Image 1 (cartoon, rainbow, N blue to C red):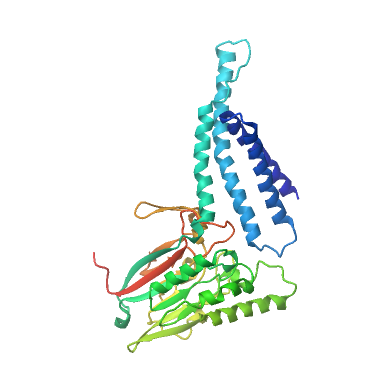
Image 2: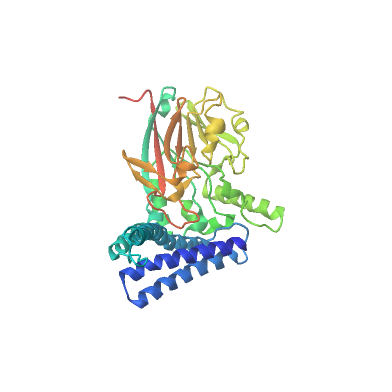
Length: 408
């Protein structure tokens, strides 16, 4: 309760402070009341959604949008308040100068400058518009990212082999069937040899995927569709009435994956064969720092040869540094997801690649290489918590394997 009181007090103080910029720019009272009204509605909805009876830490669409609109509104004040505080400090310095240095009769603090407030509002409009765009359009702005990776020990028969990776579907967040059907068609258009899904099919419960089963059942890949579990797939963020109910939920999710056509790998492997040669696809259960660690790399690879060319699916990229990259088995390519690129950042190919996710994960989006091994961290297909994406768009990865060294 104390945390809620502190949050609301800070929120209202920031809102009232931000209102000063509005008042400086316009004297229209209805604008002032509109600003305050929106502030009250946004925080009221947020408090209601996050305090009413719920199933644990479940982030359903109603909660996600409550958080999203709070974030959008707060983005205005997070820009306005520091600028206004800076202006107030300067105003105070001038007032003190006039009184104690210039020897004015009274302390006279200069008024707010309309230009400063206009500038602050202009700057605040950037994150405000970006976050709204992310909720309206950005979350379904699917991008196909293509990579070509070279391996000297790739079996000849797999030279030019194409892999499509998707990750973090988070079906419980979807609200536009047309966009999801478009994305599924886009995946099929890549005509890759194999499709690999690296976990988090749902947010919380298996039944979130039921409305989307027929859509995702249309996914095609001539050499098969393989999948693993992510941290959200286990139902750990729900207050279940019994342990048996939680176990049943996971079994239902496994059944749904099978119905869609995925071969779910639970600390095990499969071989893909071509022209008498083969590569191993290894899939582990979730293993992540600070998250569930059911992944068993040794068990998953116990029936394959150390000399096999290996593709590893593991949901959380923190597993790569912790256990994978230094393993004696040498996993040529690891595919992960989980980070979502935090659904927010700036990416200009060849120029900049930044997201707050980099403060949490060493490998957070795209291709990384160490000790002759690669990892691709997929930015995610869906979205969670903030119901949008800004700058870090939903991703469909296509990786082509090539024999030999990369030509310079």
